[in-house]
Image 1 (cartoon, rainbow, N blue to C red):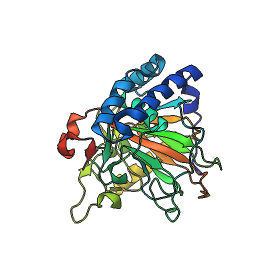
Image 2 (cartoon, rainbow, N blue to C red):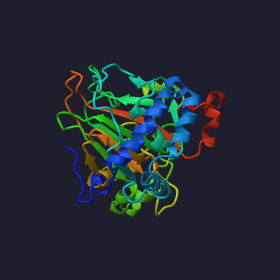
Image 3 (tube, rainbow, N blue to C red):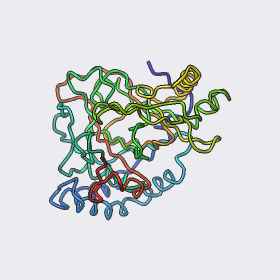
Image 4 (cartoon, rainbow, N blue to C red):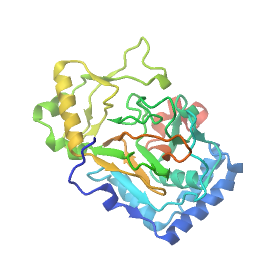
Length: 328
């Protein structure tokens, strides 16, 4: 079981849209579903989504703007009562499921993430789709991936990639009917005071390597670059770690990683997302994972949309062919 801290839960600090605000977002998203023939990944659709995003309800835009300036001690933002269809189809069950045709839910999550930066995807992950499905897949139960259902280890999203996302958005279309699947988040800002001075120093040194997952071709014969786990300002660092794929180069590094894992465990929030909930994570400050659960594979399982955003779009230009949104 994942322990949770006595800190205020993310749900207690949520931005909850009124029904009229929800209707405003729904109208914008419905217009987007008709834009560019509904081809979600097209440059024309993204241009329409950028234009629509500035028309989101003012209270929501202000909350996103504040979060972009400073993600706060928890490093996560929860937006509730976003529009999702009441007549959802069955939860997808195929591996690599994505959204290629614009829907109300896809438009809603894209507009919010576009207020934080530019939306991107990765060619080797989910076929480069901008809006991806996070669903359990039969036969993948034990995988450390979005398709698995065992406990997903805490991690920085795409920690191995030099242009990993700055923000991760997860919009719930259908909650887990068992109630067991919970999004787990932990902020380095909460964990840092629990670390010893020695652990802080060790984690700030380049004594760690993070492997690429098989979907990205792994690391092959070329070892991954050595990096620090705590980076930036010593009193307010960013974190870069995947407890399934990051390895220390020495015993001191392993002890420091164990201490960090315990600090994150002590400060973890575990949230059961329900339909219309959007969790936005600052991927520079927060590690996230998921509690274990037992899927039914009967069309009623948990279904999330996932979207990535980067604050500095120009930085990733060498990895984006033809100035598109998909990174190699």
